Image (cartoon, rainbow, N blue to C red; front, side, top):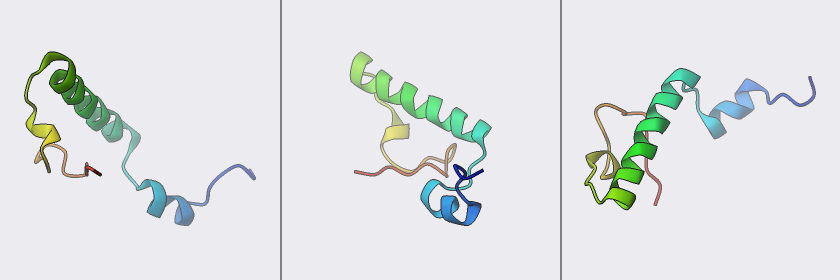
Length: 60
C-alpha cells in the first residue's frame, strides 16, 4: 500500500479523467499528430481547443 499516491495528491498532478476517455482522446491526438507530420494532412485537433475533446489542453 505504500506505493499508492493518495487521491488528494494525484488529482492536481494527473487530473481526474476516466481511463477510457483518456484512451480515446490520446488515440485521437496521436493519430492527428502522425497524420500531420508523417502524411502531411492538416488536423484541426492540433490547432487548439476541440469541441470533441474539451478536456485536452496543448502545452507549448
